[in-house]
Image: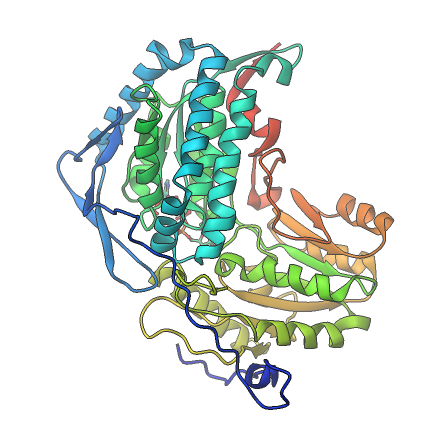
Length: 502
Ligand code: NDP
């Protein structure tokens, strides 16, 4: 990308390092994760009824490694007939097997899946990193453990639905159509499949076209766990195949995570039908730092909030609001910390920021960054050598951002932070809520009373206090406004897959 203005860099970028008084750049020996324990097949069929089957007519598309642009595998492109086949198989499994099993039996399968994910965690982490571009330390320490934790958590509820919803008669819905994005492929799969199965439904999952490989690895787990055929089905294909799944008349529940644009289309497609719907869409989270906050701790939270997973996170803290009295010291610390982030090979255990998931997403990030420059914001990027191939972007921050700038309004979904200021708590609340989104937010302050005031006033589904991007299967997650509706995680996430008759 050619920026029309050269970014400012921080002196720390050149001199960060040893206390020798000399200018010594950080030098890390590379520490690549081994890949010899992983087998990626050259081709994957659709996973229907516990079998990998070719699409009819047989068509495939390429899946690439965004860090190298090399082809990893080819996967089946489902047709309308395949969607119908998957729904029929899921319906058969629902009515003949899964809905008839006692909750304690469903729980055994879910526990088994959770344990197999743990046992095969290195394999999952490597495949996730190869396919998505995220750093191995994140897939290893966040994505895979959280996926297993979701299965463990919902396994625990499968035989306790009556206790979970007292004075109700919880009943499964039937067949669930689940469409997931590319930023947390395995974790989103777990968020969708675990509660659906615990509640007694069968599922058809459509992963994003760029990141289907951990879903197909999960298909292996389904077989290993000896789940009855047809309970979990996985089909791949473009967005229009996702829409055919959503529109299928024999689907009872639709769960979607992805862009607000597609979420609205799905909302319209489902309106007026019997289908239950959960939408988890985009975000533009405010991360608010008051002058009494522990600044060093806040810096780590800001960095984690926006540069974790290359900023490709729906709840990323992409708008930083700093109280004016601490703006300068905070910005200085932030630039210094940003300059220490290591960008590069996602398989290297030292890497902090990996590859953007696709060329298309990289182009979107570049376009929005250019708009920030054109609209007059000040760009800062640390000095950093990007790999020659792959879709990489330098972690970036903008100062001098105003509320009307596109970079303060639109979801960038990349490692780009907009820094704004405020003077009073009321001003912070007003600015934070000035967005069509309402997924998440963060508050940094020493005062508990101020945390409660802010949490109550902010229109965000999740508000973190003195931390950011913390996830737990017991805690519901979801949005207000254009960030969608319905909750995933916790009991709320279970209720989304049940009819709760009085
Ligand atoms: P999409 O919303 O297009 O993709 C998410 C999922 O929906 C994918 O499985 C996709 O399939 C599928 N899909 C696409 N079109 C349709 C459709 N018409 N009907 C049903 N399913 C469909 O997101 P993008 O990948 O295009 O990303 C664009 C922007 O969306 C990002 O820049 C980011 O701002 C936002 N986003 C937000 C996410 C979140 O977690 N909230 C996640 C991903 C993106 P396929 O991959 O085959 O197109």
